[in-house]
Length: 376
Image (cartoon, rainbow, N blue to C red):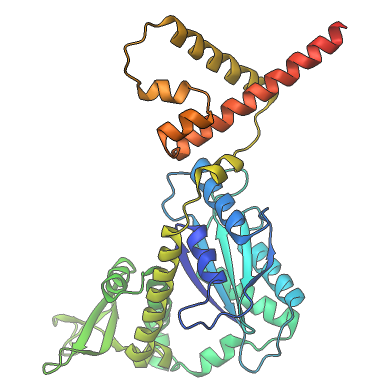
């Protein structure tokens, strides 16, 4: 099982992609197989996730943690029930079981797991070393469900660390640089937005030097070489000689690190991000649905809100009219068909205030009726 991790800002955009047709109409029978977010449709659930993240931790720019879990071609076809078990096990092992999340299936060989890192209690789930955790979770899931160990195939396709490299690393009490570079290149690729510029920026952040082999005639990149910061050697083999960076070609780190394969994965990642962003742009809920998403107020909150609104209306009646309507006047007015048509569509903030006002009035009315019944 191969996990692919990405980060995002919009659950609506992510689920719009998962439940949409795909870039080449390859998505078939997209449906939810697991999750803990309430809502009848994926749009309802996505909006719950986005609203919760915005309300509880609005300062977090990219609260989404996305994982694609793909089984090997040699594995059997999993049922929805088995995919549900896989998703639940993965979420628990990643430490996301207290977060809003959903797993979507639109193909036989993989699922997409969308997690909001903003837990239901408002705390932020930790994602440090998430790639290593995802690999460990995948290995355990493979053993539990009798699936092929993808790490064995991965290890067969990458060159072994030489005896000299390993002995040199042991003398310096570090991991072999070839192994470190593999991990850092993978992390940089997954953290990028799929563009070459972003990929190179993430390499620098990982402490990786790089140089592209650019054709002088076509200007196209045919390959990359990578070096770990601080990994140098004497140019002439003498101790006092000037030191030079040690470089590895991508293919020397493993077949999957060749530029052709890396470029293909980056292009796929970029297209996926574009699809998610496109769905995000189309995912703004109308004011009516925004009102429906508000959490119910307590009785005490409803009474306070009703009292505040009543005081505002009383103050308005006592203030001489100037013939000019301010934004505060518009907010304080009850919603009627007449003034709704005059004012046009409500903003989300106005919708929330209107929903709160109506809830407060209903709660006050119920409280008054109960008090009257007790008086009888």
